[in-house]
Image (tube, rainbow, N blue to C red; front, side, top):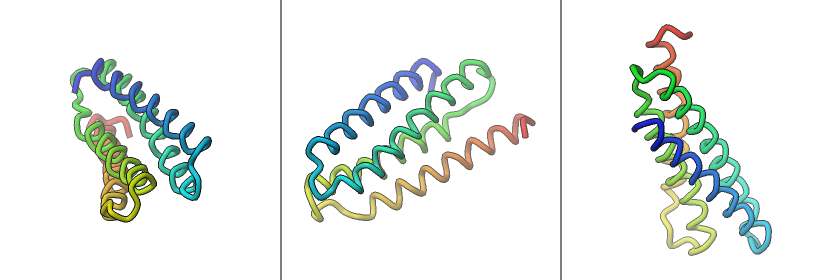
Length: 121
């Protein structure tokens, strides 16, 4: 993924995290706790994408595609899964959330691998 595209995705992820947080705060009902957790992880990883976009722009010879893809998958599956369960109830498969959490962990490990491979560690 090009740095410009990653920056765009990071900006959109940050905006949607703020929007989801506002919706939860002003009308979350009984789902406010889980949704706030989803929002927090959504925003953390939007910021992580922003940092990886900056790295990718500075280091075009290094591929950051794997951590970027895993962070995006984590946002969609973990945070998105919680958002969908809050909106639609138990009809949404609960397995999305742990798969998304695993993607977040794998994304951080992939970023560490990029750093180690570059000799930055």
